[in-house]
Length: 113
Image (cartoon, rainbow, N blue to C red; front, top):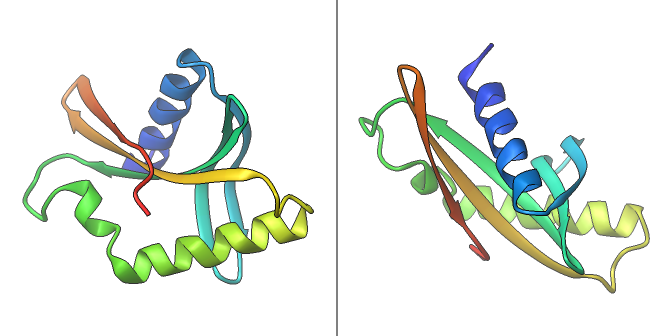
């Protein structure tokens, strides 16, 4: 299994344990991709998962730069429009996953934009 998929699976398990309802995974549109779409209480949460095995290329959150954020926003807008959900409360989160041999560390950063 690739690191990205493993990270997404770990993030999904974490979110479910926290009470999030997973709506969709790997939503793809012309504008970009959203790794996980979930509901937290009454809020739609769009989650970008970044997985790393080390910090040689920086922290995972650093990969969600202004260009990536712009793509995320456009994809979220399209998702909401396509499902007639424009009036819902939404937020965009990032989950960082650090993989170490047989362990991992997860960092959930809420409302990045």
